[in-house]
Length: 356
Length: 187
Image 1 (spheres, each protein chain N blue to C red):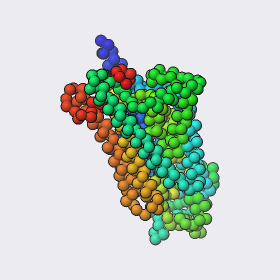
Image 2 (spheres, rainbow over the protein chains, first blue to last red):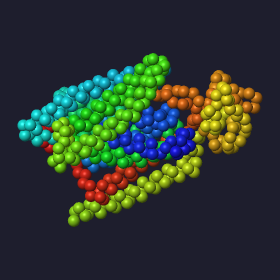
Image 3 (cartoon, each protein chain N blue to C red):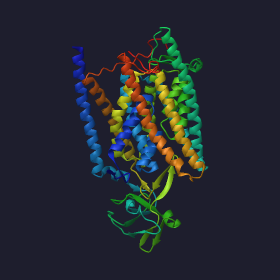
């Protein structure tokens, strides 16, 4: 047990390091900060709610830097796209925070927040599942016809519509091979920023699908570029939280040390899989977080009478981290087996790459 | 030959960034354990009230109240409460403030002559749908605004140093990480 003088509690250090590394794996792989998983975990360890949010936001900034360094090496970052989005995101986050404060003033923040989480995440989960299943079928069909399929396969025409919007200035994103109106990028950044500010999270779980389905980036580039975005938005969040006195820097440091190992694994693991695999994991993380949010919503709606809802919400949120980590590790394991010509389950070849 | 050069560069990169990471970790640890970071955190009073060591009254209940003695001291070591005004620097050893508002309400604390009786040290609150134990700790304190910039700088520097250290490590041990070919094959 280590006593954190600022937070005022004693926590086993390995729990913080372990949390940092598991969320690092998931975050580095699907391009999210993982705030919706870390904050509840820290509350379970005994940190007060505001301090859990502050430590989470600050560690996310550091973890995003670690992941960004690795994704840069993998060529997964489109700097033009990322930097064009930053302005919109920052404005959006500010509006989102004000919207949250407005709901707080009217005494409906808890329920509005949770209901919005459930609706948006469930919607994204259903769309991503349908699209990704169609994409994997396309890969299987192409492979059966002897066509070599690449890393990315999508079953949506939405990006083409948004790329045709003729509003100047038009920007060319070289790494993502996109030519698109700057306004589309800024508006996507703004809207995802509003949701991020409103939910009080980094917003990666909304921005990655937006980059894939609206802007038209490949999933790998969406993940890397989003992590670059999180460095900026997470950094801003870290600054605000630190100035508000919600951060115990030593706890952050231990979480970053754990994240260093996890984020490396998660980022490098993207080199072993195709785009649809990342989207699958992202969609599962969305639905599991939704179940957690739904249980908390049930707890709040019933006036906090049924403690079982609160208990299950915590169990679900912590279980989600472990499940997603195991899923990612198993994908890498099967990818290595597939590369060496060993037998793998039928659904694996459409999700992993044999040779690069 | 090229591979050897790559490994050598990786080794140098790993050593340099490991040294930088260790220096940052040590500095962070030293700032915390020497009390520097703690004094930046518990910097000024944000409200009029009494500065206390909040962890000592955490267990206070109606049945087992804890009494604090009002005193004018530079360092709080036990069950003492130092009167502070908004904007004043906090005495050493305090980590929370019982505000005037709390005293006026009288739900959690009561002013009795030269003492303060704490009758509810902990209350249950909720954040993002999760319940947590809320105490007087961190209440009414103002953190040094520069500590925010320090934290941010530290986190970014640490992330960069650790990220580049890991990159150097994989280069050093010969794990080849090349750029992903995003647009090869049918897509």
